[in-house]
Length: 211
Image (cartoon, rainbow, N blue to C red; front, side):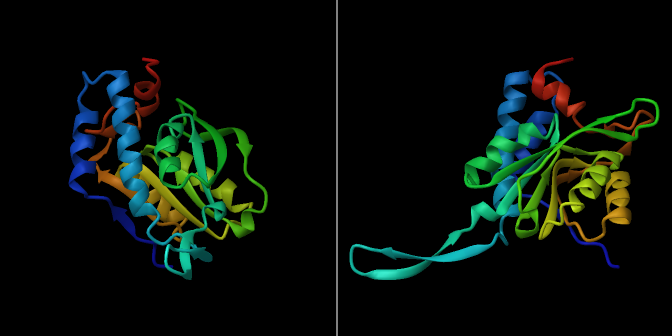
């Protein structure tokens, strides 16, 4: 099976804000604000093919049938904890979306993802899922999250990240070739600890100021 495409979001505003986020002396407040702004901009790219429905409205001149986003059919799936930094910006663009959560942590020795929480809206077979996690590093967490999500049989799945490593992309495409990936940058590689380089450090720590 030919892997789904990797969509590189190259909009100048996204790239500019990502450069600012990479700076090591960037404050927690500034980092969080920039991530929020990027998530709003990336939401426009990710939702280009969102489902629409027709509604009857009345303009000042006459009645007409016109399209609106069927946001009730969209689910943003947050990979905790860093994925929550992406969520608010996405919800600004699609306020009617439902939200699911997958709690995973990476075992520091094996780098294998371990699940500790899973909660999705009902009726996932009628919904389009957009998985949110700022970093696609080894890809182990993303692979595990999508595998678990597929048990709910959503209509479609897309994966959105801020940064990706070639190793993480390869891992995702090997296990889930049907899931398209959206990212603002593909960095050089992983280091010996499984971090993206040049990267921007640990996204969760920088969002929440825990390190």
